[in-house]
Image 1 (cartoon, rainbow, N blue to C red):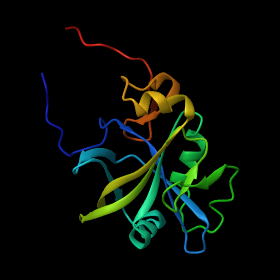
Image 2: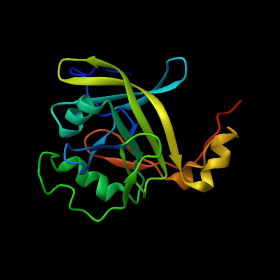
Image 3: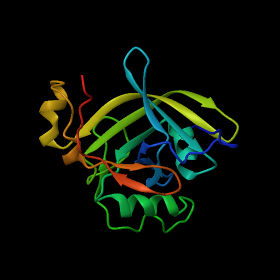
Image 4: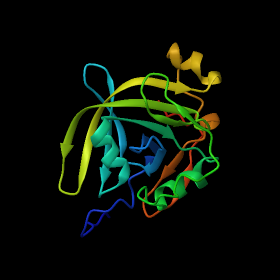
Length: 185
C-alpha cells in the first residue's frame, strides 16, 4: 500500500553533486556545492542547473553568465562539503588546499581533482520564487585522459566505478555509485 506525503520533500530525490566554480570580482576562485543539476536538449545537449536562496555563486553567475560544474567524487566530498557549508561571502572561504586552474574555453575556475568538468554558458535564466534555473550551453567538457576516448567515440557507458560520483539522497546523506546492473530482458 502507498500513502501520500503531506508535504513534498527531497527525501527521495537522488542527485549527483557538482561544485559550481565562478570567479569573484577580484579574480579569486569561488566554489559552491549543488545538486539540482540535470540535462536537457536545446538543439544540442545542454544543462539545467538550479540554485536556491541568495549565494555568491548565484551573484557571480548573474554577473558573468558562466560557471564550471565539477563532478564531486568520493575523494572530493570533504572539500565539496566544505564549499557547501561555508558561505562564499566569507572572505577566507577559499583558503583551502586545492589545485585550481582555468577552464580551457571559458574563463571559469575548475577543480583539477574532478574527473569530469563542464564549462557552462548561461543561455536562459528562469526566475522562480526562491531560486533560479539556468539553461546552459556546454562550451567544453574536461575529462581525465583515461575517459576521453570512450566519451569521444560514445562507446557505451562511462566506467562509473572509476569515476566514483557522489549521489545525495536528501537530508545530507551521500552515497557512492558504481555497480552496473542490467534489467532482465
